[in-house]
Image (tube, rainbow over all chains, first blue to last red; front, side, top):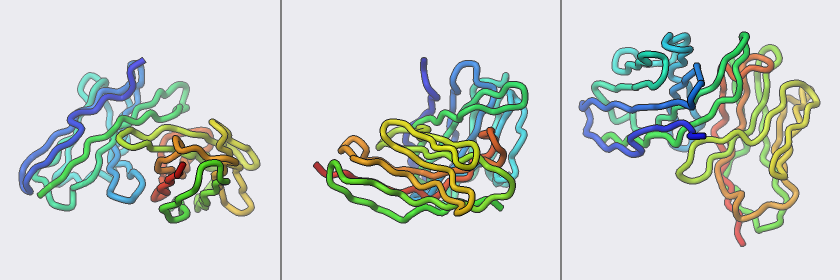
Length: 116
Length: 114
């Protein structure tokens, strides 16, 4: 069974440029998460989707970050414009929700973003 | 709010040494507790979990016991191997039995030397 797929794995951009990350969750997983992991820190949740609905985006900096999960499968996270402080690893995770319970989160390998 | 405090790294051990990575937490209610491992170049993988007080999670020789009285979930392994070299993250969920909202510690880098 394929795991969570993310692309690109690495991205280097200049500040003020836009950037987008893509995530394909495990087949059948209806819940998808985007996390940001700063160097030497644990992941921090940016947004959580249940199917195509964003149910928790309280930590997403909405002035420059946006996300979508059309059709409730794969998802895109965008930053526009990028700032130096956005340099981090962006992780995608997915899990399965049934009868009100969420099961284990499976993480992708992440996209390492460097903003110069 | 919820928080997780982990033992600072990096930790360097010789093969077959005993490992302890300390983890304490602050949470309201009755969270579930997790240890995740991140090998170089890979995503986080769930190592073990415990969903209620006094539960012991175990996997691949690693163990951790959910201690409500000390709000701790220390990771232990009796004999580490070179292949255990990775970053270990302690985490808690915001609701018993659910992985809805995970709060992570800052991670502990473990290096095992042959």
